[in-house]
Image (cartoon, rainbow, N blue to C red; front, side, top):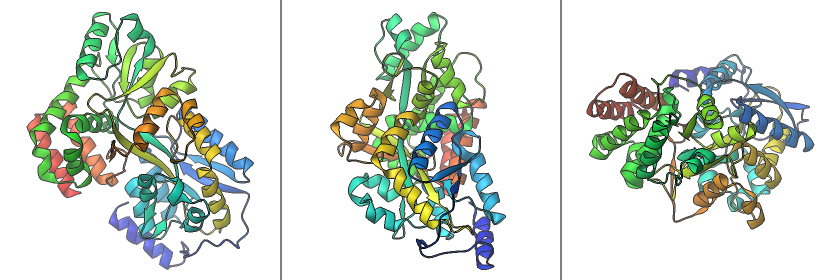
Length: 423
């Protein structure tokens, strides 16, 4: 949300068009349903959202779906702004990372401190997750699941047919890619959609520059750090990867790349683990049809994005029902069921050994890496964990220009430095 929009919302609130509340209003009578705005609209995401709605209904909370199509959630954020400015915010909205704190700053997020205390969130949630949903002394959202961005999915059958091992290094990747190319199989499914380019790049960047420099680049946002020679190496690697995508790439939905892997027309795809959920929704199995490894160079690293739902202030006075929903979302059965379908992993650190062993290989490695205090954990810029919408878009556009206009890597480094400095 831009600063101008903040002040418009503040004006509406002060004029009484958007009521601002300080407490949770537990004494108010809940209505029959909660209006939930989100962007889970692919087959796998829709399946996960529907299951979530069914689980919540069993707990006495009716999910009134307000899904907005659009990969990455850009369209949903615009619709949310529009609804707020018209004085009709949804009861619940999918807000993640920096966008969550922006909405909290203007007083439109219902605090969930009482829920956190009742459910012992400080004791059962991963500290990183609790920190993400905490702001200025308040808990401001219910965490749903953790996605691993630095995920490379590969086709088990194609790798077995050619006697190839999982691509854990770039040398493994190149060996496999050249064999697949020679056989007329696309080595890597690809899209030139800016947010997808940024998703691949930040995974490659983490592996090429290492955790310390990644933190300077993405978290501390030191513009001078973008001129480091290791960033040039990551950009060259990004262009090299795109060269294995077959015909001239185009901008297309991420599900199109997942479909190529499903149909055996592509052997690999680099995408967040929500692609695993999509493949399973289509009938593929992570035990027999596909598998996951960390993007080469990022073993024992977790580049994360966390799904969160915020309860919003509006004139419908649903605070008691909103609290009930937040409480249900973090319950263990909901966590295990929802994340198994979505491709993500639970936000809770008290998973039993039995539940952990029941996870597929992709999910188990993700959860264990996130739980490992010896591993390194890094927030995703492409998925708003560490930067606002403007910074994310500026970085994605600079990377898109680099690939589609065949720009010089050194020039792109300068563009990225400017984008970070401006943010």
